[in-house]
Image (cartoon, rainbow, N blue to C red; front, side):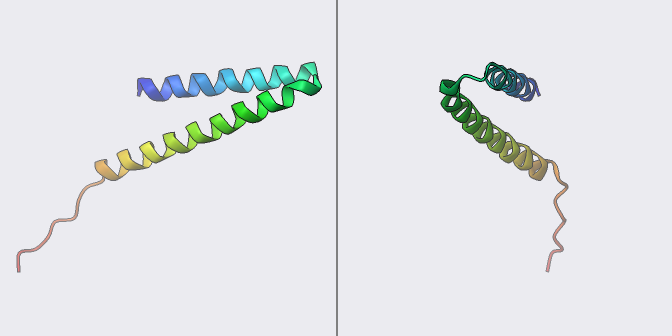
Length: 67
């Protein structure tokens, strides 16, 4: 759970950096926002995969009848 909170913190920091770049309005900062946005997308995708895997492991397994 600690890693998930760290991931969320890093996502918030990156979003704040992108917001600052947009507010400054520099024409040279678009590539930085694109790189950080792509990294955010990849991190979010990885976190969702891990989350779904953990849910699958925690799900009760159906009992099989002996034939």
